Image (cartoon, rainbow, N blue to C red):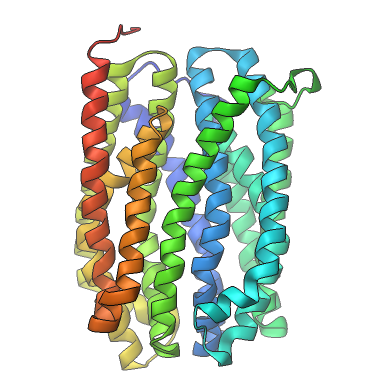
Length: 448
């Protein structure tokens, strides 16, 4: 396995970002494989209604887990700055407070989400024929959300010190467990089997990650003597975690609202939208990976006071994302129908055409999304929290507008066009903030 840590404040930004991003990309592919295997097994074994039930839960699950994961990434941003600065005692204090705050967040989110699942599904107009399965799946998954949070916390800490390889290895092992458990449980237990398979697989990744940190990463050890309620550090951790958590949550709230509009079109459209989103997410993986790598690179170099490297890293990340966006457009226009059919196992022409419509409208706008994702993550990484959060708020407003006006007027086509519009508007917002950052750092002394 690669080195337990990597200093990204020296060396070629292009090489560092690509080397760091590649394991994250493979890990994200395996993370999506979790979801794709669930979708494929359920769609082929249990049928379209069960597939629609899983689709009806995706936005809610993303809302809850997205906030938790965003908070974990926020903690890691602070850790990466201290690592870049080589402030190791501050790192130890950050690790201790991160562990405590992670447990607190997970308990609150689990309790709140479990109490509101059924009413929320009803509010989102989930069809009666799938609501029981959807509720069962969510209850099982969210009852064990602490497992998801612990893995994401430890994986984020490892990435903060430049180690993106170890989380990949553990995720691959968990994915293999998940596939085996899916094939064993789903035919016997139905949708509940898919939920339990995911929980078991995530628990495997937590155990492996914990053992690795104990053996290889002394900088990430929980040491009681460093558990100090440092007011400034606690404020920095909390504000950064809330900013990134809310950024993800606001986006997901909009997605929950949008899911309500999709649900109103019936089970066939829900199943089609579920398949389209899965394919869309697969191609979006690389963009998310590049933005995560850019954020870590920016955080470490900002902590080290190397502002020119921050700018170079961001620009390099955007160019890499553009190359992937071009590939994605070509791939979906050549093979979209095959992808949807293979994923769903369905021969319903309406389902296939509806899914293709969403995919072919969204993916050409990945160029706008590339800039948005890289800048939004990187700006958070250097402590510029307000504009990325405002951009996410704009996304929320636009999605509610889509639900209230565009979808009723244009049908599912309205759902398809709203995200490209949002990406373009939000890209402009974070772009302006990035230009302001460049202007500000011209006046600051550079380290190296």
